[in-house]
Image (tube, rainbow, N blue to C red; front, top):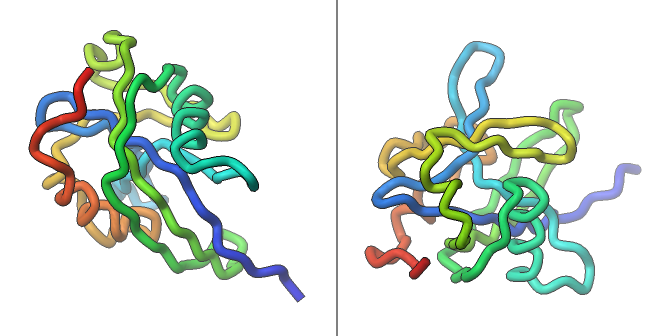
Length: 150
């Protein structure tokens, strides 16, 4: 029997004006889907610490401040057909590394797989384009109007 569990993800969202930084991927028919940089919370690790670690590992920057903005849950199937259940805890994050805010795209290293993150307005993130992105637009829409201070 396959072991079943709920995966808890710690996710970070950087803001630049009215835009947020999200990983953009395309499926096999060329439809874009968006997801937050982030990854699993290790046993015994606080979620905010996991967000800071994941941003350091994936985006290559130190987070100077973070605040919780929401969560979304995903149910779906892995490429192998196994049931996947995840809870994503999303934090707005800030870094003192100004270079990230000046680039149009940012290279992201997710488990040694290269991806590209882009700045996009939250209203332009399509809901339901993938299991991963299904609840993300709602969380982004609930972000406070005032960005977290740099």
